[in-house]
Length: 180
Image (tube, helix red, strand yellow):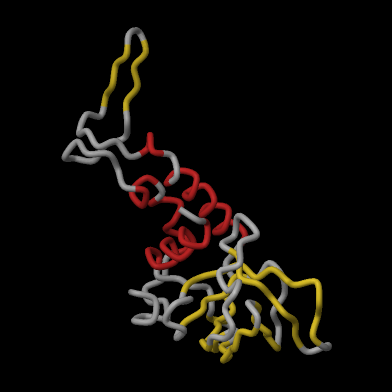
């Protein structure tokens, strides 16, 4: 699983998209965007390394990490490519144009680090055994896998439940848009 997909799933799970400024009771940024030649031009308070949510585009909805292009467009904005958070792939490469709404997301660094850890956990097939057995023995080596009451392996959200709790919100503010 790609990091941006993990970040989106975790944000959905905790119902927090970090797009809302609670002190001013307003959204951080919500703008219409158009893509040209595989890059998006964003005017406003966007910079490389920011996480954004794209909605209303049909094919490119999701959470992405912004990577700034070498060329800049004036003082009021820049060209960015969308990244999955782990490599340099740009899902808009070769796309002439698309329109959508972009929200600036401001997750805490601890949240992204937790998502990195969850992503590593989810990408390790040993963490999701298909058997119901919680204890395994091979020769003199044995280990016990964390299991729930029914003897099945814990889900990723059960494993990380206590660490996800501080980021949980009752409502995300983007219900319906992001599959909540």
